[in-house]
Image 1 (cartoon, rainbow, N blue to C red):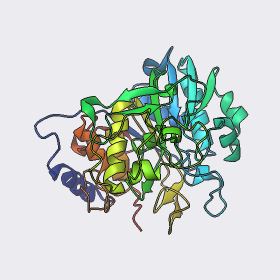
Image 2 (cartoon, helix red, strand yellow):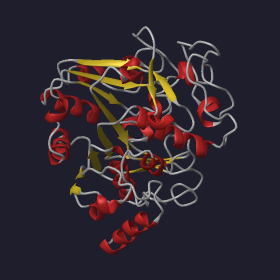
Image 3 (cartoon, rainbow, N blue to C red):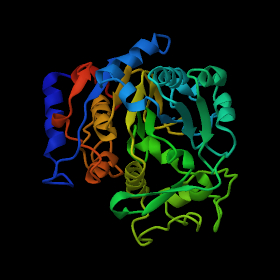
Image 4 (tube, one colour):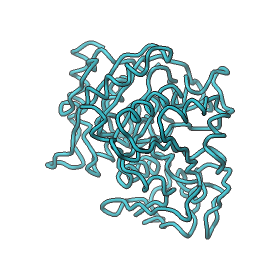
Length: 375
């Protein structure tokens, strides 16, 4: 992408009427670093953008840090038989390196979380099935924990996190208490497109915060099913059933049942209810054409990027532009052809800006980072 093309994209991103016209949404710098391989010195590479953001010590020292991984889909689903970390999962070396850096910066406790597909069992077992070296991850820092948030897990009950302003789909979400029992929340995402949300970055990653025990297709009608085996298609995507009666009901059961409307709104609400303090996007190796091996036409790509920021909307806006897309696009425009733009919805909730003119990019210039995902 030439500088002229980038400037045109920035201008397009800022031309749309903002949901908060007249109100200035937050902004924060975003750092980009070039990384060609997971075999490089990831410690030095990942430390670079974190340092460019001012260092993480001020954020994590003495704190409990929760890292939300992106492990979408069953570990048994592989693209061309490759390890999922080089295709559609967060790569284990990125996760381990981040834990090491956070521990070195003074984090008191580091907890890895994910709502594991089709199981309420231990996260460690899911990681082993995914080909991860769990022992190496557990010893990356002095106090590492693991929590499968697909059910209540070790806790006696769930945390109810309210959507500021009351929400549009749900007023609040019942989540595993790990999301409440933390000081710092990190979204460790993968640089990918998404069939329902256009892109899946640090914001979309929090969709996996929700427990299938409550929001899954086989969730209990009255009380949660603590041994869930299915996804959240009927409840979240299609709205064909309600979550367990123990959780808040939908605000308007007559609203659109279109997944392209529902899921982006739910993601924005979740990001507002459980704010992200640090967004890191693994784009060293990934896939284009969708979010996982079940998507037709999925292909391997190597953008060679690590992107980090302290505001998830600004971070995702830069990442979306780095994918060759307009972060301010509206429904019907690539990559949001069949869906609402989650970034703009999060912006409307006051979480951050999609206006690239207001985002300082540090490290690798954005025009040098662009890798076009569109075939």
